[in-house]
Image 1: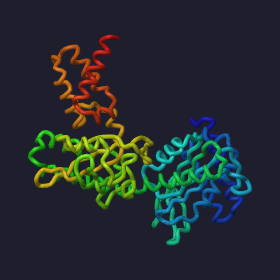
Image 2: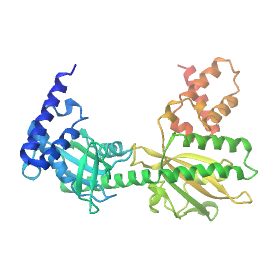
Image 3: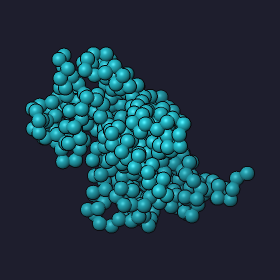
Image 4: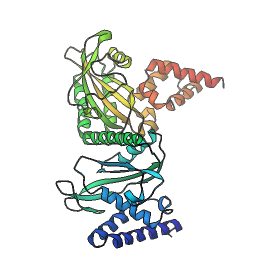
Length: 404
């Protein structure tokens, strides 16, 4: 049985479609009515039932007019404060409207950027239309159903607390342009990044003898685990080592993918290519391990606005000397944070090494308490920490618990 708010929404949208037919008439009116109907189809009733019919119609009709011309690969973005004389309706919020090719991560990436800018999102409308355009980008048809020659386009409408400073509006527009560019680069290059990382598995068969078989197999399992939808690939770049000691540098090879298409895009803050290596990278080079997991200083602009995860895999020459790195940049998926570390390659090895290092009898109270500490240890830190420091921290937590 339909609720009162659902019934009210249905009636409001129906009146708005009738208004579109009446105001525009003919084919234009019918097309706008179809647009209005699809535009509001999946909006929660509570979000629009306080609006009047005129606002519902004018807001959608204005957006449809804005979307009339768009070239492939060029998103339309406008950030504005709706006014009757300019847009056909008045609003108390600043509105962001975007039209672009439909792809993953659009809504969450834009929302994350708005939140990062300190803005509260009051309304999100996100229909997907099947759009047919001419070679010059002019819209011929916009429908909810698939048509011959049509392409899926995302129409995104966000409302945030009102901004009045023109510089602030222009800055927000620029930030959203960068976000959409990053989303597009990450999605377009996903297959290429996936292939590059899969290629690491083949190279593991030719690692130098000084790398133990157990570590090679655990590295293989970890890379396969990442490829099995446990890592969102956002960027990939390969580096060559140049110089030695404190002056050692990494020189980027051409052909970066995703976010790292841009040769000037930094992984670590205040560290550019051909600059002295960050301490964590230099330390990794000295260690006998194949893989480094760390955090970038830079936050992701795609999917979640958090510090990006960086996975570095060493490259060797025929003599076994480290010659460079493969840098994989992205985000571990939610599964990496919810599943037991005993089911994650490399982490399971860390846990086992830590348990062995503690030396507790397997069935003892201390052994069980330590196992629980490691199971619930902050996952980001568990991914990055070395076994020696993990043992020290875990025992410290255990001893604190004993003292209540």
